Amino acid sequence: MRLLVGRIGRAHGILGEATIEVRSHDPDSRFAVGAQVHTDEDTVLTITSGRLHNGTLLLGFAGYNDRNQIEKLRNVFLYADVDIDQKREDPNDYHILQLIGCSAYLESGELYGEVTDVLNLPGQDLLAIKTPNQESLIPFVHQLVPVVDVTAKRLVVIPPGMSGVSS
Image 1 (cartoon, helix red, strand yellow):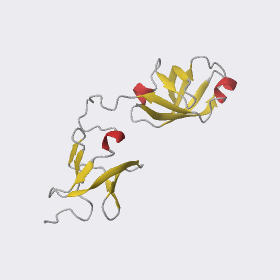
Image 2 (cartoon, rainbow, N blue to C red):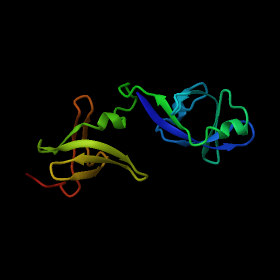
Image 3 (cartoon, rainbow, N blue to C red):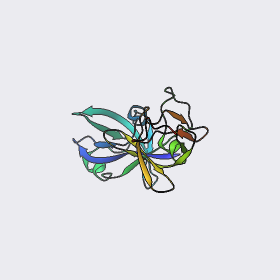
Image 4 (tube, one colour):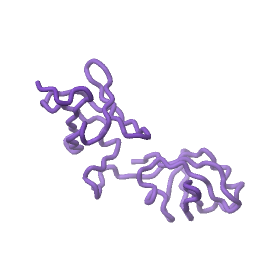
């Protein structure tokens, strides 16, 4: 599956490096030297250099050797081919697409709704869950989402304000 992993920003220096707006939780492997990324126009770019400069990722690409060439890529989105079902080292690491479509159940076993989106906010991720009456946003933290089974497409959620409520 092809997923958005970044956006090319302005040129940096005169040797063909660009600033990168990272949109991946795994930038070390997505933007490693030798890795390939795709653009909106389905051009394949091979990463030839990568470094951090004042907290900003700078990348160089094969065939883009000066500031003028790299400036032509400004605001181009970068995509990587990702196997979302690949086994991860951390069993509590999920891909957003694995969570969307999961059924959310209350601790009592009652169906609460379906996960329609995962919002990546600075403080924490939120699960958007469509319930019969509304959309509910639940922080994606272990205390409120104690069970995640992406294979069975099932979550157990404790909506804020409902914890400690007995049925």
